Length: 127
Image (cartoon, rainbow, N blue to C red; front, side, top):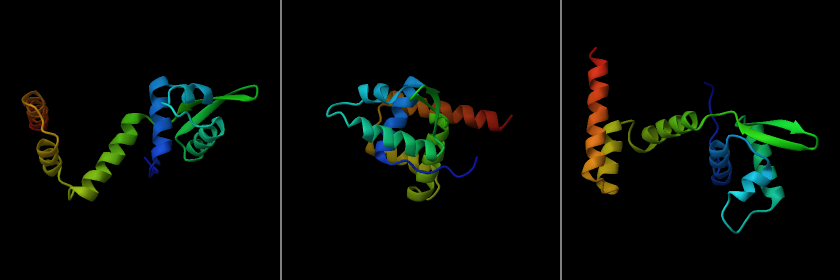
């Protein structure tokens, strides 16, 4: 995958909505934004920027456009998380887990789930 551009907060908000609804018109996106609602032209501009960055495509319906994601949420989050681990945690997954364990006050159920997933990963790597 070629380098994926980082999204601004507003762009990411629009993408989160498109990932949830799969496709929609600008009015559909605006409906899902909490008040105060942004202007139609603001969201339209953000969607066009997302299109120029390669995140969004569209279908034409007369003068209207229905937009849809070209980048999957899991792909974007994978790239962003890898960058965060590299830039803030010295490329160490153990530092990430330690950070969240200390700062999120993880409950026992969450810790058990992480341990279970790590054990499955370890078992799969030894096969």
